[in-house]
Image (tube, rainbow, N blue to C red):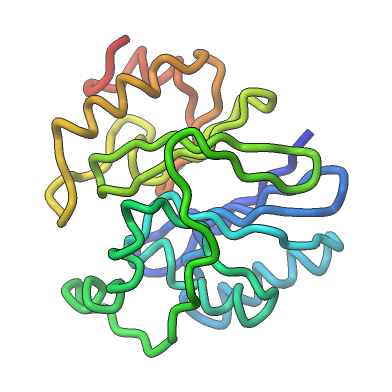
Length: 213
């Protein structure tokens, strides 16, 4: 069984998740921790629960989801796991951030691993499957555990909405195709998005105007 702790980070209220299991190992999803207060809250949670961080996985490489990469690298030696299709976006993230008026001086750590559709990431006794869901960016992915009925959907699927497609690499056609694929997951699958509250596949099918099966 996994435990999930959510931290709301930076000026865009981005969701960072720490996922741990009975082994004490944990996976961190989308660390957008921008300043020392947010970083300390994450570090205090990890230390307070005697966790050992093993992975930092990114659902995509937009700046609000990667602002804590250097913090995790410096503190725990973690290099981010990024979809291969978003590797260039990650490397140029400072340029993209500047277009939104956000500047930061951190040198981004080198990508530790590039993943593609169907790959798996593992920590402790748990494995998450990578589902490539382009549309919000070229390299958006979902991390899905069938065993835990849990999907970290990044900015592909929100409660009552979907990710914007007007940014570089975005495509409305692609995101609709990606969402149709996600809607094949069981209705009880818990959806943990990159912004906002959690939901389920079943709830979104019933109420989200962008979705059908």
